[in-house]
Image 1 (cartoon, rainbow, N blue to C red):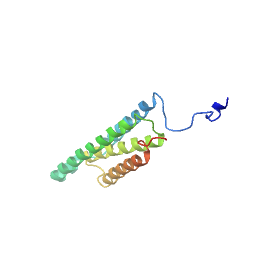
Image 2: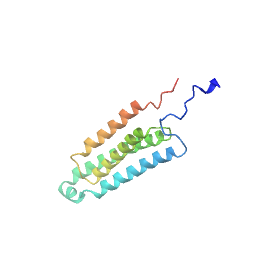
Image 3: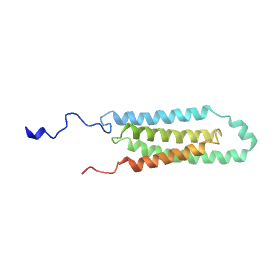
Image 4: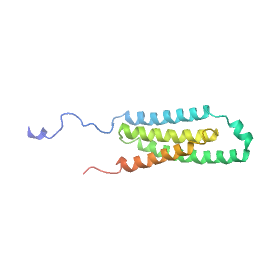
Length: 142
């Protein structure tokens, strides 16, 4: 029975695999984005900013649409990524970053939190990029 000596007694801890794991990861992504957008729209009073400078408000809302498009593209890439096995740390970074980007787009549309939203958006984009580079999704085991 020397054939079975090199096999591990238990499965190794690693990326979560299984039939429900992609559903859970994608559900976390959708729930995070929904929560972030809901919170962003609950905060802020756009009426004051619109009355103060309507041209600036129109420009900022245009930027919000652009940031929402970038967040949507990142969200679709992460949705595809969540179809493959991933660790829960990677899942948290991806889902949290996409949720932050969507929340930033919503806050910018509501013209609230203009002091911090650019920093948050770009930090989330950087987190996605760094995680994607270190993820190892494209590498194959020898």
